[in-house]
Image (cartoon, rainbow, N blue to C red; front, top):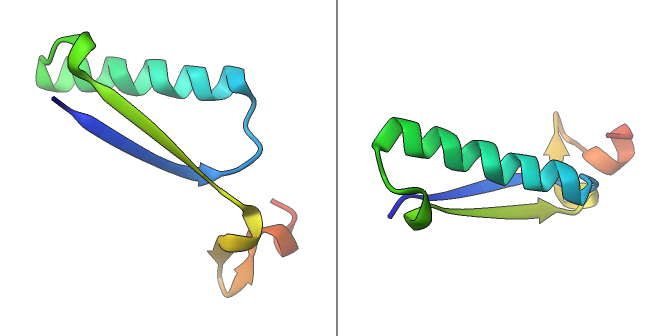
Length: 63
């Protein structure tokens, strides 16, 4: 059973997250041959103040 964990900053729409789940599932199915029903995708949304880029939080960078 393939299992993908996706980490990204908060702020994506439900439609964007749905698209990520669909496309990651498709890619894993194509790459591994695993049945779609056995593939799991877990999106971890990180608060912007908890994500650092070049020593500065993403919140302070306005991302």
